[in-house]
Image (cartoon, rainbow, N blue to C red; front, side):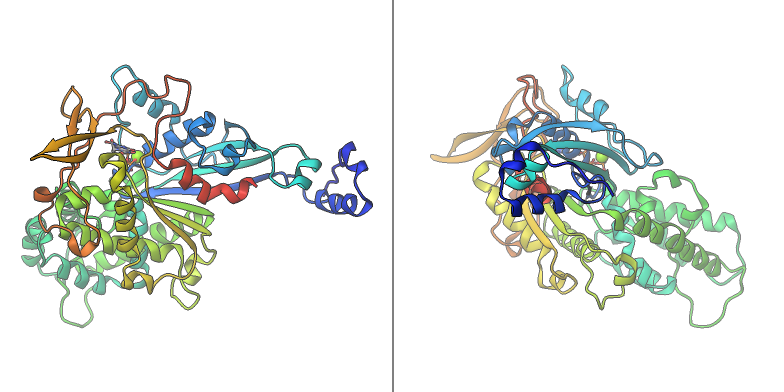
Length: 477
Ligand SMILES: Nc1nc2c(ncn2[C@@H]2O[C@H](COP(=O)(O)OP(=O)(O)OP(=O)(O)O)[C@@H](O)[C@H]2O)c(=O)[nH]1
Ligand SMILES: [Mg+2]
């Protein structure tokens, strides 16, 4: 415990206020330096790397962050990068990602494969008069943790045994488009006897075919979201590890099987995956997060159509359950401490004109708070919004058949000249989503903007500041 001497100015105040001030400063060391851990997640390509890069850049040059109350009120003094607290976690490579976005030929950053972390320390003046008197400035350490959303999708596995998992996967693979994508793996497992004696070679063959199916499903234009186990798609440091050498099999009739059967081998690996990989990730990393932003590429799913959006809705329901399990839920003992605030953000909002942003935000809200999802969720402060971490377009108008249309203008990824694009009208409700997205929408991807940040300000964005105000604004007061 330390006691900080109150500044001289306090002597002018009434005795009562001075006592309050002394109470306030007689606290553990570091009371003016608080730390918050912000998890940034989302499924592959949702925009995590661009989000973190733009966030850090904008915190260090906060002119474009007026939606953050501390900036608007002139209390935000400075932000700087500091060494992160967990040396065993790779550092988020901010400098390399920023250099790609700001190069003479701007490029989007490389895809990332593993979790990483970065600490930004923000110095601000407290909003409260009393706290300002005690200590002019305070520091908030913002620890940003980037991790793949795919890993969260493994949480439901903890509740089900190997046999149940096999039944669920096989039922899903009876439906298109999984049916076609999984055909080779299905043919293989249908051709083998799961309870006959087996060996490592047979396990590897099944695992390779199953992993191949998951990767094809991820790369498929249908953009499937719910792919389990998450580490098969994004193995991180476990690439090639025996822990990932298993696959669902066709369940044999009930009974007891030889220990050297393929079924028993797969079952023990599935159990090991849950206990050695899934549970420790939640226990050691996930439960240490205080706030969370989940980035969701709703537009990509819309581009494909209703099936892909349906798959995304189910994935979001599973993500939501991770953040706020009810006290009676089986998840409570695993997750225990609850995340306080969560933003679910539809990313790449610059793919549609500003006039459609409300609809985009509404869509992510209705996908998330689908009645089925709501049942699993109890009361964190949740916000949904549409944002673009890096604005690559500007709004434009074009006339078609005598009607003026709201469009966006930018350089398409596969072009080299600016183009005005009418992306289509977003639906008001999920029920109105076109079955064939390609016929209804045209959300092109664009190159990053030229000379972003060359004006000395932060990278141009849409509502990044609002998202941060919801997530950490209360800690900057
Ligand atoms: N127009 C626009 N495109 C974006 C924005 N953010 C991301 N993108 C696009 O989305 C792609 C993926 O963004 P990343 O930030 O790399 O996504 P990620 O979630 O880190 O992806 P992985 O590391 O592969 O999981 C980029 O290469 C861009 O094409 C944005 O704010 N605006
Ligand atoms: Mg990334």
